[in-house]
Length: 337
Ligand SMILES: Nc1nc2c(ncn2[C@@H]2O[C@H](COP(=O)(O)OP(=O)(O)OP(=O)(O)O)[C@@H](O)[C@H]2O)c(=O)[nH]1
Image 1 (cartoon, rainbow, N blue to C red):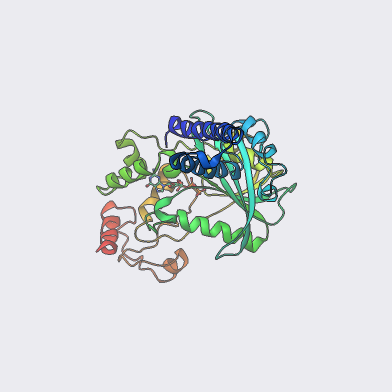
Image 2 (image 1 turned 45 degrees about the vertical axis):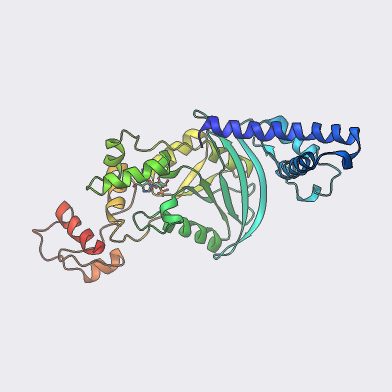
């Protein structure tokens, strides 16, 4: 949804709520519901239903006024106990909406929902965070800042390691009994899903992730992390141990004012379809992967892990190097057919 469309939608929800209230009052004052035409009654019923939808939502608009009036207008109603106390996080563009417990296939987490208005674009997104343990007030809290990847996380694509990293981070904070995974709606390093699909199409002709974006006139990476600072502040986390391989992410977070005290590597196993992607991350975007994507040997054998490749691989023919495009192409082709 474009910013204008998102704002227009928000505005229309707010104004329909207001109009409904007026209509209801007028009709009550006029009395004689029986006398109303059937069409009017139906319209009223629809309006009442819409009004319920609006008031149950903790905040249907990003205006501070509406956030406070939404909760105060509810006082005394039977819904009170279900209405979370939404509030603005500091004086920023992020609004806390609600926290709930979430049972998952990995364990029980705290899930917090926010609404965020991007500082430059004003695009409205809904960051979330999964929390394990009581992180409030602590130092060196393990934090993963994760950007959306619909293709791997929902569709199961093997072209990247995003889902593996998300799983790894959730399992890490569970096993560690402390930590946060902040999930941001910044698909495709911020270019959006449709553009990412276009970039995938260009990659089919051999371009890596960086060149594919550039061929389309798209930036390499336009993610911004102001929501992270706000969420970290909201949770009163004093400093973070960031789960990442990406130095840019550390720099950007520090620029935002997040106190990053250390880095927890988040390296996954490569597969035949993600090797090139991981290679591009290390070579083109300076991610610290320690060659984790090189899980094959001179003879084209593929291994589950670097250790296995080191132990069993055939590295005798030094005339062939791992770096050759052809070799990568052959290996990938074997996987594809
Ligand atoms: N433009 C583009 N984005 C991709 C592609 N594959 C995955 N992504 C997106 O890349 C983002 C993840 O960024 P990465 O650069 O892989 O990793 P990172 O989050 O910066 O670094 P880590 O913290 O180490 O995981 C997600 O938003 C994915 O949707 C691709 O081929 N092209």
